[in-house]
Image 1 (cartoon, one colour):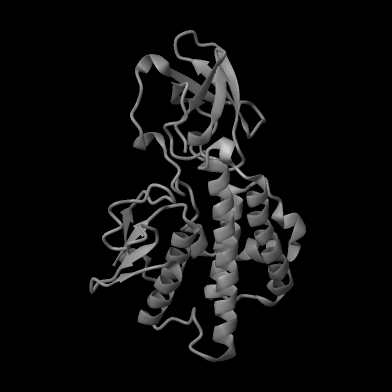
Image 2: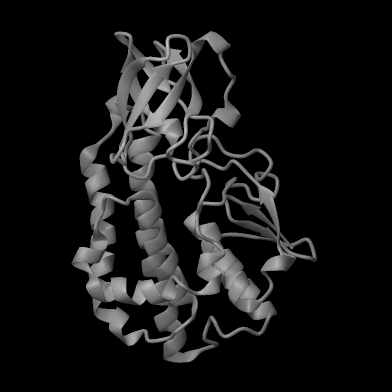
Length: 297
């Protein structure tokens, strides 16, 4: 089998967690992709007209999407127990899946609004409205989590991936303070081998990185260094004069490709050549500075 893969997509992660729980993860070839909400990956479209991940190609050549279909297919072909066969339990698990996926989808929309949309077009009420869906979903989960026990099924897997995505992309949102029962459950569930094997660690979500854009002349390179004891503050340094040019702030959970700043009195936009903020955060990184124009959005 093959799956069009994006390493930080929570929906891809859900499929891979299911595959790990079923013991078939090593049978699925991961096809790299660059699917995004604006610029779709042309290599996916012939298989999936939506150009989205995850998209699964079975051993028989059948193409399946989206994540809910893929997860149930994997479970069915392996005679798994992650989806109840019928009855009230099946509808309960599918309802949990729908809620968890809705929370994840809302978080993704909030991220797109703050990362991909041009700054002058961003709508704060939209972002707040999407994150409000996450909060009300957490309220439901908070009352249900104490009854989860050691359950491992499509409902708990989907909730695990939803909360994992919040930690990955919205670390400033302290959801644990508002949902201690959910936090306690997630702490245990997140230690499962399937969750640990699928922790998001790379660039995703359709945000461009330096691998996808032309590199400017070497003379425009500066270095990026993390300020001591400040998780959101970075220092730009000239590669010629080796002195500080500017300070920039990084949105919580944002990859370095989203860093913006001002240097030498000119408006600039800086992009890191590593794929996400989790790569060697205390080391210097060479980044191009694009003066006078926006490279994101």
